[in-house]
Image (cartoon, rainbow, N blue to C red):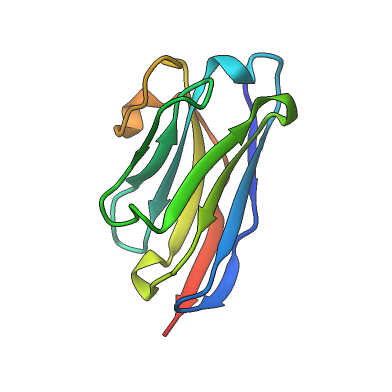
Length: 125
């Protein structure tokens, strides 16, 4: 059983930065691939970034490539999403998720077994 808690969301102006954190419980965090998803009002949850269990592979949605960076610290049971050059279109609730397929990184919601409660990111123009 893995429990995930996101933090770090808030209100920023366009062009600003935020760093989201996701703290995980459990002793097997290092076995899970981790992902960040986001959901805007009226839209489906979409993949943002993912990282393999040991951090060797990362994957990004084209909309955030070059602006966002996902990383993890397995000793601290934490995954991060550094968000730079934020745009109003990035406004959404951001969710952390864990996938048992630790050897790869998936983009599908169904690939992830555990989810956090979400943290709101609002980018003003």
